[in-house]
Image (tube, rainbow, N blue to C red; front, side, top):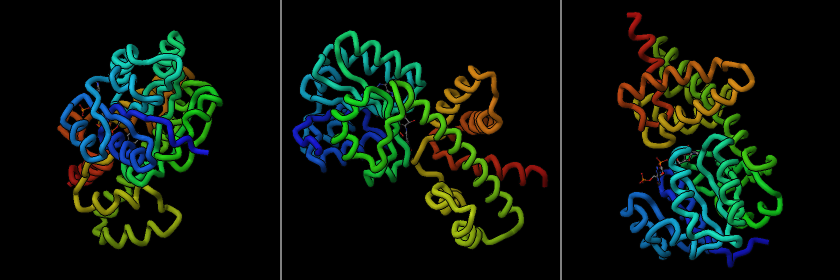
Length: 295
Ligand code: NAP
């Protein structure tokens, strides 16, 4: 049974955090929000009729569950430092950012020192999944702690999988990010090839998406890609950060993964060219370039 009396606070109101906060508000669970750029938190707090915390510790003092969704490892560690003065043994921190499993383990260790529970709970499903409350959630941590978080997870996601101890949620997310890189490589390369063949791209999308090559990324990003539009969905620079994590984990196994290595090179080129804030489908720019440069 969802525990509707749980008070949840959300930290990090970006492309993913803001819609998650809205869904928590719809479920009657959201009590407070905080964001580094204050104006975003003030606007969302006013929209949802919840409190706008003055700092992370203030948010923690007024909530049972703190859900974080920030960019990268160093950002999350900085937020945890700011949170700690407001945490105690009755509170629970759930992190939905994508970070290295080692960072999740370090945070769990720090929070355990004050008796505070922690779950690494990275998510997948894009901004669409965050808006619709249909995210896939990969949870690492203690099974009883997960039960305390269940109402929070049910408000933002559809598939909630307990993967094992702290860190295993992030390891699972790394699996997801390698697959996303491969799918992005395949879709953007194939569409650039179709364009070079002079095919009508709208018809290619229609027919291919109904066959064996159909997939989520093609459905959600294909039409924008062929119009040359790469609106803010999942920032390319954030996927680059995730693939650096995947690369480091693979290196521990003595392996360099071709899809990861190749995508890191392509993304780095696009970031240098100023496209790091575009959606990952901007890889299409790089694939198109291959065909146009040979002419
Ligand atoms: P985003 O739109 O760029 O938002 C990033 C958020 O993190 C903003 O609220 C930002 O605050 C905050 N932040 C960054 N550095 C911070 C710091 N040092 N201290 C405090 N707050 C900080 O990114 P997003 O797409 O929501 O992604 C957030 C996380 O979810 C990332 O780890 C990403 O890999 C993961 N993710 C994203 C997607 C997706 O499709 N977008 C899907 C699954 C998972 P400001 O507003 O002040 O900049």
